[in-house]
Image 1: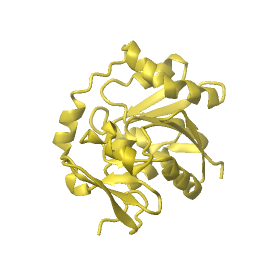
Image 2 (image 1 turned 60 degrees about the vertical axis):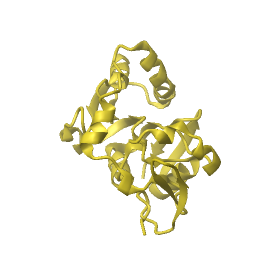
Image 3 (image 1 turned 135 degrees about the vertical axis):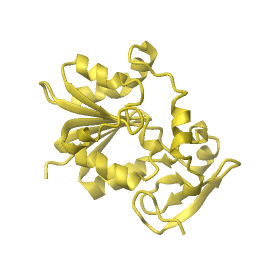
Image 4 (image 1 turned 180 degrees about the horizontal axis):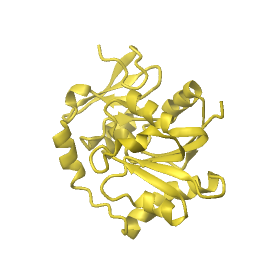
Length: 214
């Protein structure tokens, strides 16, 4: 039996199945995840990403990212801060936007900016936009994200949230073959309680998590 890919619970039940793949849900943390047997290979996954056309100077893309950048900036202390954009993709527009505000921003992406040295320190804030749903091993990647945030720092996420199985069955978001981990408000509530975080939901797909001081 497949264990939960996020919290390792053995309490996992079938959730939904379509012609593409099957999905499971954890009874403990409520993560919905694609059957790991359906995961693409790294080459197949990158081929999908290479089709994306997100550019630093694209005003439409910047407008999309503002839905995370604006509320995160409002929560940050004054001054020049150190940030990391995790999963920045080929066009790290969000990093450019925060640099324009005077912050020092590093970028990381396993395919497009695979500089592991930036993962060896902590930051005042970390962003991860439209990337967490791509995590094949979210338990490992989640702990990596948390390790990058200083105590009292912020983790700003953007991902579409799963609600119920009826909506999920009609949800276009699940049809992207690289989308394999589907979080919900309940999932983030579970993680916040377990990992010493405060969580705020901004709109339907922006999540702000602050790491407790101790």
